[in-house]
Image (cartoon, rainbow, N blue to C red; front, side, top):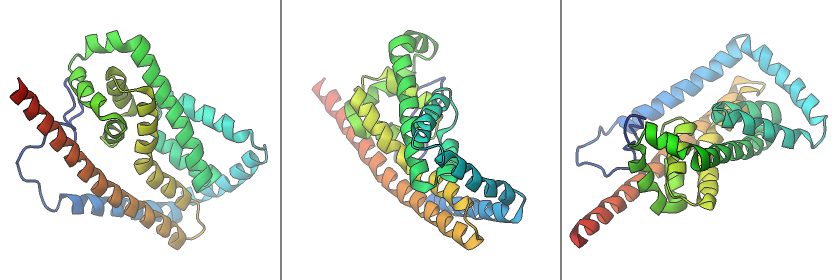
Length: 251
């Protein structure tokens, strides 16, 4: 799934497909590269001094959980501030799983990332809209394609390769509803957040075999996500093409 999300022009990730053939082995090589990257990560962690640093994560986790339940809302607020400032959420997601464990870390970072993205969305929609339109007017073309697709449109936008701030900007320029933004962002962040959380949780396992199991699961999740999002994106493109043809015929 490719996109040319460029601030100098409208991103074309949701535009209708052409009939040009795609390389049949493209997806295979992408999955192979992901698998090799995860395998390399496991080897680096267990065969380098990084392992000693990760061992301290257990001590950090014990200290934080010893602070009581307040540690979770405080961590959510911290993630919210970092994401709203542009810090990559996937990095925070992996770190959250290292510190809190897989599911608590995933929940904390997802809630914080959702709030951080929503703050950026609100700021751009209510205070920065005119500035963005003046600087990058072509972004409105992409924004216009989003608002008619509700939660599904927001979900698919979250799968496009691009910085969260750019995606938040395009969504803020569209007429997407607040509830669609929140639900679509929450669901749309999971396909990348779950593998990142699995990687983080796998890195602190005692043996390379245990880590490899988590990383293999992360790779499998990535594969399923790519396949599912590919079908959803093609369906959305076909719908856009049909709507364009109907509008031309009606005109």
